[in-house]
Every structure is written in C-alpha cells, then in structure tokens.
Image (tube, rainbow, N blue to C red; front, side, top):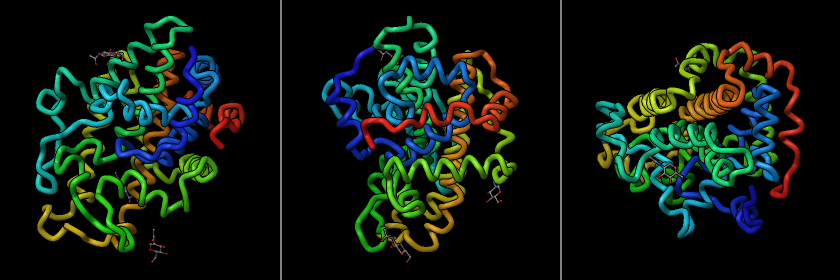
Length: 311
Ligand SMILES: *[C@@H]1O[C@H](CO)[C@@H](O)[C@H](O)[C@H]1NC(C)=O
Ligand SMILES: *[C@@H]1O[C@H](CO)[C@@H](O)[C@H](O)[C@H]1NC(C)=O
Ligand SMILES: *[C@@H]1O[C@H](CO)[C@@H](O)[C@H](O)[C@H]1NC(C)=O
C-alpha cells in the first residue's frame, strides 16, 4: 500500500466541514487503540503502514475535499428526514440515496471490503481508513440529520463569533473543553476518557456498546448506531424549532455546559465501538470481555500511539 506522501501530510493540516473535527477523530482513534486485541492491532498497523491509526483517522476528510475523492463526501453522513426537535429517527430506505450512498451503506461496504481484499492491496488500506473515520462521524448527531444541511445552515455564535451549528458540534465544543485540537490534546483527552470508562463513568450507556459488534451485519449495526446518535437531535442539539428562537444564539454558555457530557459520551462511544469493530473484523472475537481485557493490559497503547509525522 502506498499513499503519496503529500496526501499524508496535507491530511493532517486540514480542518474540515465534513466531520467531527480533527480532535474528535484523533481522540476516538487513540481511545480505540487502547481497547484493541493484540492481533487486531497488528493487522491494523500492517495495513495502515506508514500511518498510525490516529493519523489515518482523518485521511477521509482530506480525500473528500479533492476532485478525485469528491464522490466519497456523501458517505460521511446520513440525512435523516425527520423533524427535530418534535420527532427524530433514521429510515435507511428514505434517507440513504442508493446511488451516492451514505454513512450506513459506506460502513457496510468498506467493512466488507477490508475483510475481502488481499493484504497489500491499496484499496484495502483506503477502505480501512474510511471505516475508522465513519465510526467517528456516525457518533456526531449532525452527521445523522438532514435539517438545514446537517446544521451547516444554522447560524449561531460561539463566544460572539459567527459559527454554524454543525461546526460547533464538530469542533467548537470539544476544542473549548480540552483547549485545542493537536495530537497532544487528543492524547490527553483519550487518556482521561480511557480512565473514566474503566472507572465506570459511562456505565449506564456502555452496556449498549457491545451490542451489534458484528461485521457480518455491518449495515444493520451502523443503522443502530446512527439511530442512537440521531436521538440527540431531539434530546438536546436542537432544543427549539429552527429558525424560531435559535438563530444567532450564543452557544458558549449554558448550551455548551449541557453539551459537554453528551460530546464526551459520544466520543467515548465512538472509540470503544471502533475497537470492538476492529477486534471483530480481524479476530472474530466480538465480546466485551476481550475489549476490556485489552484495555486493562494496555499492551498496544505505546506502539499505536507512536508519534508520527504529523506531530
Ligand atoms: C464500495 O466502495 C467502492 C470503493 O470505494 C466503490 O467503488 C463502490 O461504489 C462502493 N459501493 C457502494 C455500494 O457504495
Ligand atoms: C467560552 O466561554 C468561556 C467562559 O466565559 C471563556 O473562558 C472562553 O474563552 C470562551 N470560549 C471561546 C472560544 O471564546
Ligand atoms: C448516563 O448518566 C449521565 C449522568 O451520570 C447522564 O448525563 C446521561 O444522560 C446518562 N445517559 C443515558 C443514556 O441515560
């Protein structure tokens, strides 16, 4: 597998309109690396070489912004045609265009491709990068929403500055929380989420994390994740009908305070599921047991988190 060097470098410089910002993706990937089965970690490392999992997690955004990769942009979301905040819900037949695809079909397609393609095939490396990226994006509520282009057309303010609601959820909230978006910020955040998961902070939701970690039912599982993420549109993200009352609201205040635990839970969920998914893909082992054992042993943490060219 070889990816042109410029592509690896530029991918680490871009901030994006398509997904969780760099911080969310890096943190989920770093967190996932702490829950990987050693055999899965070895397989991932061999396929992504010379990139680490964390560097590879943001490649798909760069690629979607190129002329060559434009076709892959719709794979980063599913446009649920629901009516938040009154009613939420994803319906694949209605919301996932057959021709262009969406994040649910893309998780299915690229999971299958990673498992089917031969080692050394460049396409296998690309499909794995997509899977890792989409496991992040599918946990961002506005990536599961059609309204106002997933909130891109909802003008708000963040500390007085003009922003849109999509960007606030991709980046502003998490960057405000941890102080920046660098590799180092992501590593620190992943460390604390890892410790909190082991300490049981997410006990009320983590029971659902082990459900449907079955790559042979990839679309069905992705649909379940998207549906679960989408419920946040009604529960919090859009507290009132847009545009009435929401336009240009200042969000760095009580809205931010309420969003922080949700973002933490979503990023923790993404990282944990990413590990479970990769473990299942590469070892066939899909139980919570194996994931938690890997987390306790922490064997692969240092190797996968080695500092790459993007630091
Ligand atoms: C699956 O991925 C391949 C490689 O990117 C792409 O050519 C194909 O159109 C995708 N199929 C579906 C159904 O999305
Ligand atoms: C958000 O609000 C807090 C508290 O008022 C402030 O310290 C911080 O600088 C604000 N964030 C931004 C991005 O301006
Ligand atoms: C889990 O508990 C936390 C508080 O400990 C709460 O904020 C969160 O909404 C709960 N999540 C669910 C899905 O019940």
